Image (cartoon, rainbow, N blue to C red):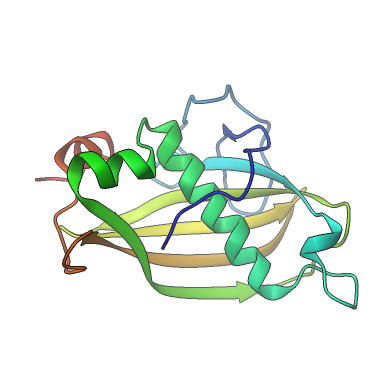
Length: 172
């Protein structure tokens, strides 16, 4: 996962998520625990632009992955971890290892969406994220994403850096 954001964030914030209902936004940078989950849910507002749509006028399926990538990048940033700094200071990068994604309803040009990210579990060198793309109370797409922490030189699995593990409450 090259968790690079394409363009500036569009007002990232964190808010509780209790399933498919959209919750009111909380303060920017103030994660809150979601009902039924131990990990706070991070939310990134995204507006659908013409470039995101296909000939039928709906969001092209692969673009949901781009929206989720942006949300994960901004989620880490909200925790105080920039991707370039993780690579430079800890010698690690994160790569998507596996995605299990379900498409429920299409988004269309001009829609205002929320893209969420929450940690669902971890290993010593892996993170499991749950992500949703919602429009109001409708869940359009949901996914479980497995991220591998890799040594930037060898591209072999590497332990998640201690400061990030501590922030995410991952045992060392």
